[in-house]
Image (cartoon, rainbow, N blue to C red; front, side, top):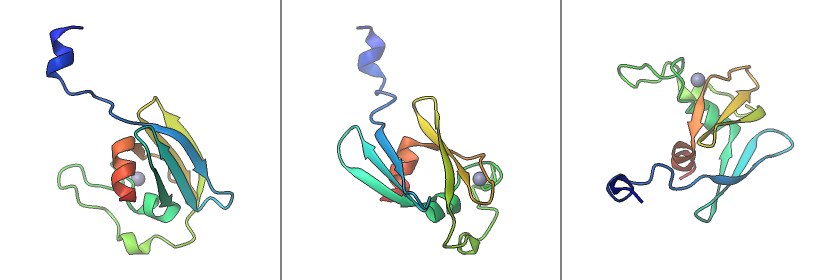
Length: 109
Ligand SMILES: [Zn+2]
């Protein structure tokens, strides 16, 4: 064990151990390694996509009105990004967002 192990906080405190997309693509359920689970709607994920196309880099301002995202938004595909995040392909073909575990947990809270 090096000195850095005691100085630096652990980078990855938790991750999802299971990710289930409902058959209609509207709900994502995540089971966390630190216990508990979170459920997110596809609409919420699309509304809060963190990609550069959806959030202005400088201001952090969202480039669209979250209310404009339709209720029937679906996730077509869930892809793991390394072991730290998930990427989604939405029904509107948007797929550039990378959702880190902590962000997903925050969105579900
Ligand atoms: Zn986006």
